[in-house]
Length: 199
Image 1 (cartoon, rainbow, N blue to C red):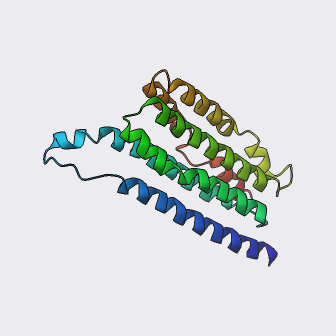
Image 2: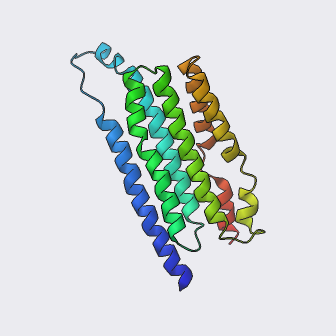
């Protein structure tokens, strides 16, 4: 019964998180203003905004997908997990602002660097949430063992730091690192799927 109650509480946190992520995407798309022109050329002026929106939509989708998988591993719901989850949502809630600034500025150096900083802080928050959930499992459990090989989680902050630094060299080089991280995480975390199957 205790495990069932904890699962229900985790479901509530997941539902709240899903709502916040849905609002984040909605805010981003509402940033688009209808162009004054009536031809395809009018849309080309929105190119930077569209590109920054695509970046952010993919990133929010990746977080939504992996967050969904991660919360299936919660055994005991507590205040620590809720606050760490809120910390993750806080940084993600700033994505629409940095997305809009980056698009409006046509990928200027500082907005692009700030975008990378926000993604870095979101990644670190996700890692802290993951670590707190791992501590609820035995050290030799399939979940902990598989998550211990977290090469994606270790590589991503490093790539974000490079993206932030290269924003002042070339925002397009910085963008390549954003794309690289997205590609790495695009497929949902199969380690968690394997741990769920082994239960």
